[in-house]
Image (tube, rainbow, N blue to C red; front, side, top):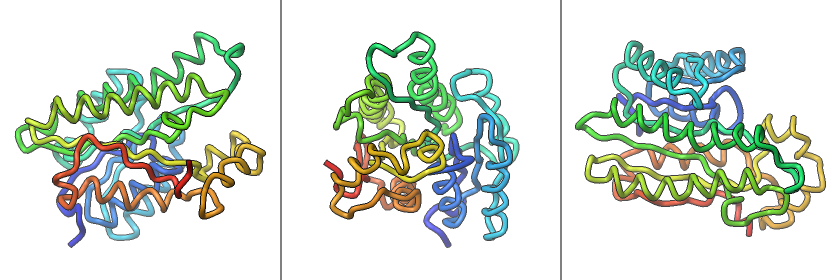
Length: 249
């Protein structure tokens, strides 16, 4: 039996990158997994197929986490397919880097609506579905909330907000047997980082230079930590911001 046998997990933004790897790891550990995506249906279906081929159970569900109606439908579909959720991983996120002179209202809202409002809406629905038995919420944040690199005022702002929300909700929901923690990755080589031009850039070199291992992280470096936080092994862990950055400082 896996560490998550019999559990139902919703992983947002799971069509690629860290979210996809977490979804696959959860499936290997026995959870029934809902692979959420906003636009990349093909990617989400590949993740579902990988989980199915490994002997697990999964479905893909489209939902924009910044929209309350979509999030409600996501959890309703989860319940129809597998029963009420036990685990929520708030992984869906967007980012862009730029100088303060380049910040626009539209870009601010794009990032905060997904990275912050989306977490609140998804957690709100998860709490309603967890019920009396409690549950586990894992937020995927970032070391940018602490390192505060230049040209990241909006993105770092969203992750700083997420860190605080994690601690607030841990205090608020603890009496209901709901654990809330965050994983704060450093630089990770994902499809998003590649398409954004980060991989192979001077920015990548700067991140690697701050990491004793001398490389970017991989999604597979992050997923085992999510499994731990979702499992009973982390039963005494809540309100924590767990840095998974390869020693990046």
